[in-house]
Image 1: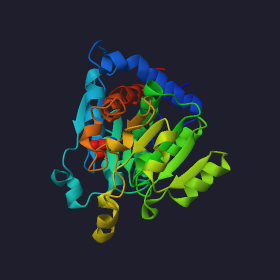
Image 2: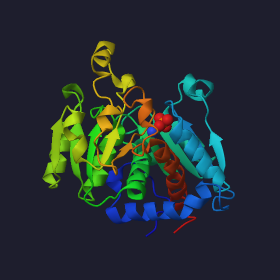
Image 3: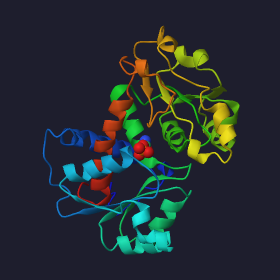
Length: 308
Ligand code: CP
């Protein structure tokens, strides 16, 4: 199975076998991610980071992943300091940077921008999140977290919060359908999972239920995947104010749950998980953020063809 020169744009571009291969590669690289072993896999390689939207985890974990593998990072830095401010379009920016670097990681607010960038790039493009649809490297690390901390096959999972705009849940439910997951979607009606995604899942024989109550389902799932309400995607700030605090995981919600329940969150959180949950054995979200390092190492090494 060769990933050399392959773009990473959407989870829909990957089969279950290919996803498992990425997860297996990440597992082998985990000691390097922890700093326990050293690696020269990306010696002499340059990874360009182009972030047109704010990011902490995706940007820094790609940076750490590159450095742990002895590669170097070329960072566009703030958009305000670049020629984008003079009106340069994304296609030209990508054409130029693909002559400077061996791989490009792109985060951009527009749906489809990574796919478009891949058409103008002479090197692999990894989508670091575009618009409200795709965030494949987050999905790879979510799958890795679930595999490490629970199990993938036939998982009973609830996804909760902003299911309308949350790109991580859109990618994740497609990927989990390959493993026969049972899915519960918990959201205020205004932020429910897009109907075409629900329809698609049902067409593929995935059991899906929808509710607006965490209390109703918390005793019945193995993983709860919380998400924040995406303020930046609301056109009307009043609409955001109405829904921003509707769902919250608290200590009291977790009083009688199964001891193996794992709570994930792509982060950043705003108000949807109380700090008292952090010290419980259910909290997995900081560990999940770490797993972004081995996963991004694996994707970099595979796309640049230094691991086969
Ligand atoms: N989970 C995630 O994408 O975080 P950042 O926005 O901080 O990269």
